[in-house]
Length: 239
Length: 135
Image 1 (cartoon, one colour):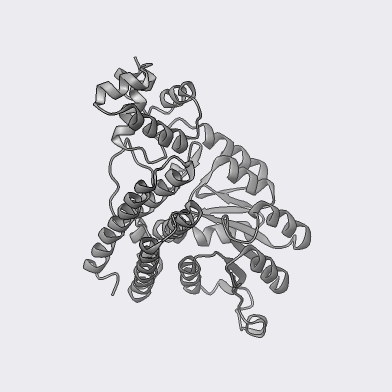
Image 2 (cartoon, chains in turn purple, brown):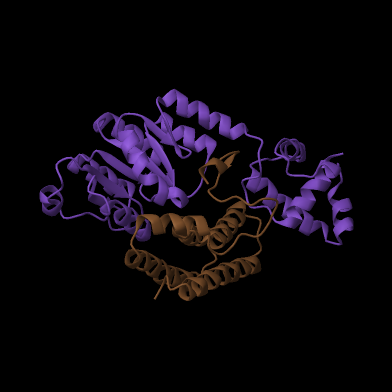
């Protein structure tokens, strides 16, 4: 894949307000880069000085342009995001990195902060959080889950707590999958579940594979415990 | 919206007990409206429709059923759809990607997934056109 770079001469000599934060946006989706650019161009406090569509070009742009902040898509071609963060921490420690992501597991989010990220923004919340996130990390604080944290330890603790939160389900479960979970909690076998819903056992297995994948569990017992903890099933099903 | 980031998977717009998502999330649109003038808003949604039309066509034309190619294509659609509040399309793509990566799908099911993605995109495109958000 070709890398995307703003022409060096243009990037280095582009007039930016003296107090504006200089930003590089690295995302392999052109539309996301366009979205970031549009949001930031509405404010004189920010200036996008470079763009990249791979990890390699993100590193090149960062080392070349020395931005204040690098927006980095967590899943881009050209390597591993965590390794890139570690490398940038060594070679460009003054550059703050904000991770952009559509979705991320709590474990992966912790890995990013551990490797040196200062912020994390969900793309779906980008329009409302991009400005406060930029200002927060520029001050030396941290940003995740839509709010500011004073220290890396605080943000790591919050992410750890989020992983254990027992609120509503956060993954897309279909009504049928929820029904299957209810019967798993009751201890029914695949054959019993198939009989109850007039499905083949193969179909029940496929539902279970999908459920395991969505919820990140690998056994029926784990599923049952998680379902009860996170209130995925109504009380009647759990009894 | 951000407070929904909990549990083992972080997602911006969760489903509550499998209730269907709307094609467009009104909160996300409102937030973009607050931050961009209407002309810019139309510009970005038009770009979304154009780029996604191309990606969906590419998905339909995929000769290979290579899960890597498929998952990368739907991942790309999901990213921009999520950013602009096309939540049903986003979730359809993420669901399709998860199924393909789980490796338990017969080839015929990939065709079904492609159709689901196409349908979700068609829904949101119609709404955007109706709302005057894309040209």
